[in-house]
Image 1: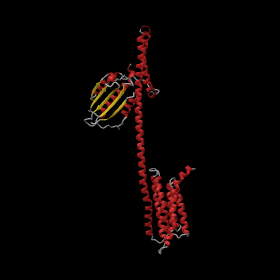
Image 2: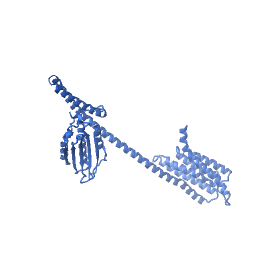
Image 3: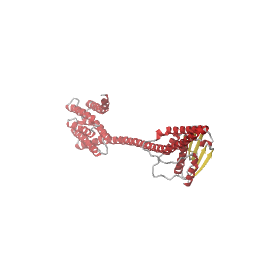
Image 4: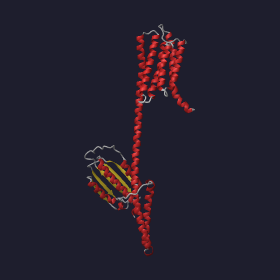
Length: 417
C-alpha cells in the first residue's frame, strides 16, 4: 500500500497544482473584471458558461494523471479542451486551459521514446498547437474580436503554448541523455579495464602455476636422490645419513611452503603442463645479453653474491620475470633510452633488483591499437606478493622510469638447500 502511494503521489502533483491555479483564476478573473467599466470577456461567476468552464478545466487537469503512460493521447485531449471551452461560451476563459497544455507538452517530449516515435510526437505537437489556436480563435470571435485578429491571436497562442515548452523540454532531455550516456560510457570503460586486469592476472597465474610444476619436480627429484643415499648410508655412515635427512627436510619444507602459497590459488582443472626453464638470478647476464642483441642499450651490475645464492627458486624466477618485463617495457615505451640493471646482494637480509631507464631520446611511435595501462605492473605485483617481496616503481627525476624489487632473504633462506 505504501509503495503504491509513493508511486502515485508524484503523478498527482501536477494535476492538483494545475487544477488549483486554473480554478482560482476562474473564480478571481470575473470578480476583477466586474470592477472595470469595459466589457468583460470571461464568463460571469455562477453562470452556465462559468460552470461549464469549471467542469472542463477539472476534466482537463484529471487527464494529466496519465501524462506519463499515454503522453500523446493526453496531449491531444488536453489541447482539445480549449475548443470545448470556446464552444460552451467560456469566452476569454479558454486561456485558462493553457496551463494544462504546457504540462502535457513537457510530459510528451520527456516521456516519448526517441527516435522511434519522433514522427508521432511531432504530429501530436502540431495537432495540439492547432487545437489551441482553434479554441483561441473561436473564443476571440465570440467576444467580438475581428476574424483576422482572432486567427492571428490563435496562431500566436498555439505556437507559443507548444513551441516554447517543447524546446525547453528537448534541451532538458538532451542534457539528461548526455549525462546518462557519459555515465554508461564510464561504467563500460571500468568494466573493460576490470576485465583486462582480470585476464592479465589469470594469464600470469597460469604461467606461474606451470613454472611451479618444474620447481616442485626439481625438489622431489633431489628428495628421491637423497633418500636413496640415506638407505645406503644408514648402516655404514650414520653421520652422512643424518646430514642427508636434514637436506630432505629442508627441501620438503621449501616445496610445501611454495605449494601451499600457489597451488590452491593458481591451478585450475584442465590445465596442461608445459616445459619451461628455471630462470634464476644467475641468468640475468644471459637476459641482458639477449636484450642487447635486440638493440637495447643495457648494462648489468652485480654487487655481492652470497645473499643472492640463498634466495629461493620461486623468488629468483619472480625477479627474473620482473627484469624481463622491465626491459620489454623500456624497449616499447622508451626506445633508444639507456637501461641499467643492478643486482645488489650486499645486504644479508635482502636482495635488491633495480631496473631503470632514462628518458627516450626520441618520442615513441604512436601505436595503432589502444593502450592498456598497468597490465605489466599487475603481473609484476602478483609475482612480488607471492614471494613476500616489495615492488616499487615510478618515474625518475630525469623523465625515465625505475622499478625496484626487494626480496627478503630471511623468508626464502630455507630453500637454499
